[in-house]
Image (tube, rainbow, N blue to C red; front, side, top):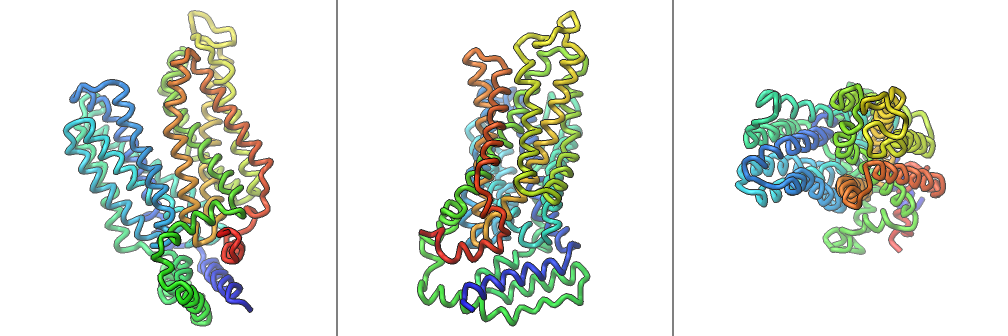
Length: 501
C-alpha cells in the first residue's frame, strides 16, 4: 500500500472515530466558544449601524460619511477572510479564532477612543479584519470535529448565535436610550466588546484544535489527546481512540515531506499551496460555484437590509413598515432550521436549487410591483394606499426571501466545508466568505448608483432577480462530479498532485 493510501486511511480512521464518539458536550462547547465569533460579528455590526446618528451629531459629518462608517467593517471582514485562509491551513484553526477574539476586544475598545471620522474608520476596519480571520477557521473546525449527520445542525446553531449577538446589542441600546436618540456611543462600543471578551476567556479553558489538522501536520499524539478529551466530554469511554497503529504512517509521511523539502512549511510558496488546491483544475468549478452563490446570498441579504427600510414607507401599506421588518426578522430562525433539513435530507444540487429558486421568487413582487408610485403597478385601494393584493405580495415576498436566504447560509456554509480537503479547508471557506462580503459591500452601492441614474427601487430588485437566475443556471450547468465526493475522498486527489500543476 502506498504512503498516500496509508495517509488517506489515517484521516478516514480519525473521521470514523469522531462518528463513533457522536454529538455531545465536546461539540457544544466548541460551538459556544468557536461559533461565538458570529455573535461578536452581529453585535459589532448592529452597534456601529445604530450609533452613526450619534457620531453625526457629535462630529457634524455628512450622510455619505455615516454610510461609510457603517459599511467599512465589511471591507475589513473581507480582508480578514482572505488572510485567514493560508494562515489557518498552516498554523491551525484554534490560533486564528483566539486572534479573532483578541482583535475584536482590543480594536472595539479602541474605537471608543476615536476623536474624528478617520479614527473610527481605521478602528472599524481593524475590527472587521479581526472578525474575518475567525469565521473561515470556525467553519473548517465545525466540519472536522462534528459527526457528519450533525454538521448542518452545528452550522445552523452557529448562525443562531448571530441572532444572540443582535439581541445582546439591542439590550445594550435599550438600556442606554430606548428611543436611540441620545446614545452614549463610546460606552456602548466598550460594552459590545464585553461579549467577545467573555468568549475569549471561555475559549482559553475549553477550546481544542482540530484532530484532522493535527494529524495532517504529523502530530498524531496531539490528535489522540483531542480525541481522548472528546471521548470524556461525550461520555463514550468504550470508544477506541488509539491512533498508535496509524501514527507511524503520518509521521513517516511528514518526515518524507521534510526530507525532500527541509524547510517546506517555511518556504513562501508553501503558504500559497492551499490556494493552488482551491483554484486547481479539480476544484476550480466548485470554488466558482460557491463564490458566486455566497456573493448572491450576501448581496440579497444586505441589499434587503439597506433597500427595504427605504422602499416600504413609500408604498403606504396598511401595515407599519417597522412591523413588516420585524416579521421579516422573526422568520430568520425558521429559515436556519429549514436549511439544516434541506442539507441533511436532499442532494447538494437540489438543496441549492431550492433555496435559490425561492429566494428569486421573494424578489419578484418588488421587481414587478414597485414602480415608484405609492400604490405600485396594481390598482391601489384609494387615497394613495396599496391594494390588499399588492400588500400581501410584498409582505409574502419579504418573508419568502428572508426564509430562503437564511436557509441558503446553512446550505452554502455546510457544503463549502465539505468540498475541500483538510489542507485547504480554511482557505476554501475563506475565499467563498470573502466573495460573499464583496456582495455585502457592493449591494448598497448598486442601489444608490441605480437611484442616481434615475432608476427607481424596482430596478434594484430586477437586478437581484437576475442574479438569482444566473445562480440557478450555474448550479444546473456546473459539473458536480468532484463536489459530490466527501472531503476525505478528495484528499487522495489533492495529494497526488493535479491541483499543484
